[in-house]
Length: 339
Ligand code: MAV
Image 1 (cartoon, rainbow, N blue to C red):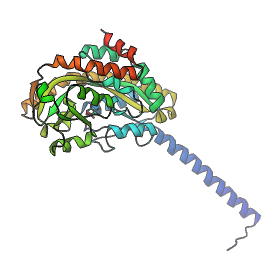
Image 2: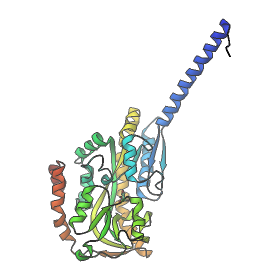
Image 3: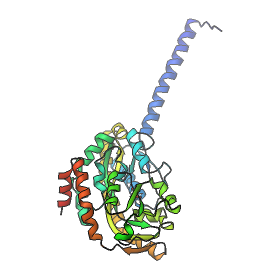
Image 4: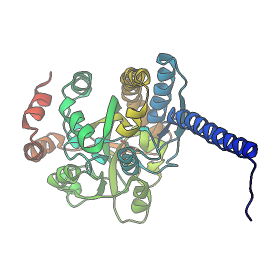
C-alpha cells in the first residue's frame, strides 16, 4: 500500500525518524559505556579461596582509587570454566575482563611465561618475595602483553605446591613411573619427567575424576586449592616436596583495558599491585594453617619426601635448557642470583 503524505506530514515523519535514530544512538552509547565499565572477573573457587578474596580486594581498591562509576561482576565456582579457558577469553577480549591465572596455563599464547612458575625456581618464601617485589620479571610481562594481549597488573600466589596422591609417594623409588597430572605448559611435564614421574597434562576440572577412576595416581597442588575443591577426598596423601611457591598474576585482557578511561586504567594498576601484595601475604600465611586444618580433620596424611635435595640436581639441566630455548638464560641467572 502506498501512502502519500502531505508536505507537513512528511516533515513530521522525518523529524520522528531522526529523533528516534538520535535517541537510539544516545541510548546505545549509554549502554555501551555502562557495560564497558562493568568489569567481569572469574574464579574457579568459592568466596573462601584466596584468589577470590584477592579479586574482591582488587575491586574494592579500584573503587577507592577511581572517582567514576565502575562495577565488578565476579563469577565464582568455575561458572565460566577453568584457567585455560580464561586465558583464551582474555586474549580474545570476550566473556571476562580480568582474573588470576597460573602462568603455566598461558603457555599456548606466550611460551616464555611459565618460567615464572617453573618448579624448583624459588629457594624459599624470602627469595620468592624479593623477586616478586622487584621488576625482574618485566621481560616476561612484555612478552605476555605482545603475544597474548594480556596485561599483568599485580602478583598474587604464595602457596607451596606439594605432591598429592591416592597411594603414598615418599621416595625416589615410589616416584618412579608415578602417573600424575601436571599443568599444560611443556616445562611442567619436562620437570616431573626428569625426576622419574610419568606426567600428563590434564585440565584442572578433570583431575578429581581422573584420580577417582584410577587414570592417574595424583597431581601436585597447594593447600588453598586442595582444601577448596576437596581434592583430599580422592588423594589424601600429601608429600612435602615443596617444589613450587606459586606466582599467580592478576591479569587483565588488553582489549578490555585499552577501552577504559585513563584514570580507571591507573586505578586498576595501583589496585592490582596492592591487591597482589594482599593476596601473597594471605596465601603464604595461611598455607601451613590450611594443611594443618586438613590434617586435624583427618582429610590428609602428610609425609616428607626422602632425598628432596637430589631432585634439585635432577631438574637444573632441564630448567637451563628451557631458559636457553626462550632466550632467558640471563633472566633465569638473575632470578637465581637474587638474594
Ligand atoms: C591451583 O588451583 C592454582 O594454583 C591454579 O592457579 C592452577 O591453575 C591450578 O592449581 C592447577 O594446577 O591447574
